[in-house]
Amino acid sequence: MKKDAMDIEPRYIVDSTGKKIEVVLDISTFEKMVEKLEDSYFGEQAERALEEGEFIDFDEANKKILKK
Image (tube, rainbow, N blue to C red; front, side):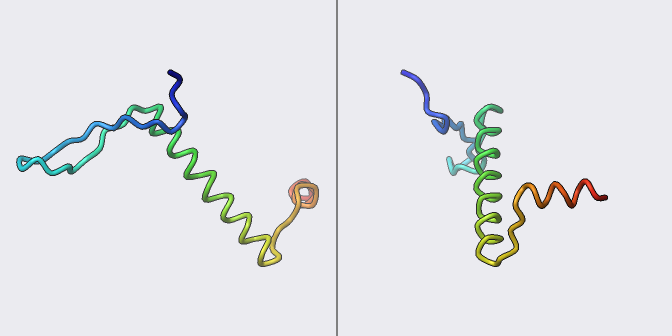
């Protein structure tokens, strides 16, 4: 069975009472999670810029960068 990109198989570190206190993830899962969080954050920022009228399309931004 193929694993989904976000199938997470965490391992837990527990204290002396058995309470979960930390999570251990393999690096691949961690990197995928960070990438999804970053995508979500930048998507949210883009939506906010569009709503507030602060959005600059790629061509306009590229022209400003090339002028510097």
